[in-house]
Length: 306
Image (cartoon, rainbow, N blue to C red; front, side, top):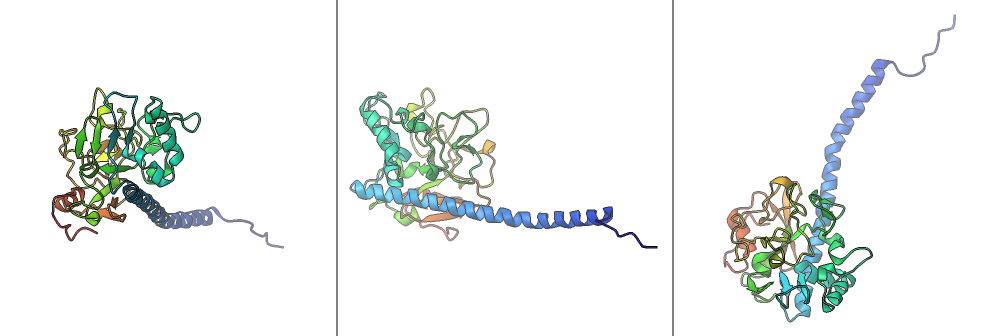
């Protein structure tokens, strides 16, 4: 008699194959995640590099002046030029059209952020890709995840102590030019990673087009501005932790608004005034971090600085 031929696998053989596939996937997943994170860090580094170079190019075009944290030419909105440092830098990151939309409307008694831009968006609703880190999980479709789509977000905050220490009315301006920063351009941070969105249940966010504290009435406390280290000044004296190192591995809901810190697994990336970008680890000491933040403390950066 002819023996019947067996077609296919037995149940036990099928389970073994499935188990082997599951083990392989488990081994590959961490490697894939590491590759994705490395790519995200590289993309973030490139974006910070472009922002840092934009600061230098602005200075070159404006008698070495640093861009103001908040620009304003009058104290009564909206009939004047008013813009955040992110808005001021738009022409230097290849976003001249959006900048022109804002400034042209400002001349016609419209605030820069409310100017018509790419239909149907206004300037404040424009999503600027260079301003968004791919690892920033607090941003959804270009906007803070904890609020609506009225103001676009950014993952990069400006150093208050460098760009906004001199206050005049609604304007927050730099004390120095690019050439006379006391501690030197290679020792001073210009921009650092931050969280685009903040606590659920609030409307706080790092809004790139938001002009500054004086416009956030009745609560002019910086809750909408993309700024870090803002406790060292009159506007935000209530913030006590501004001088602490970056928040790394901290959930969106638990973040301190006055501190830097993005969403990479082990570092917070920062742009320096010389145009370089540095990855700052969680082990950086408070003194080293503070020395890199302050432009005039006269202290050398510690051995834990990259």
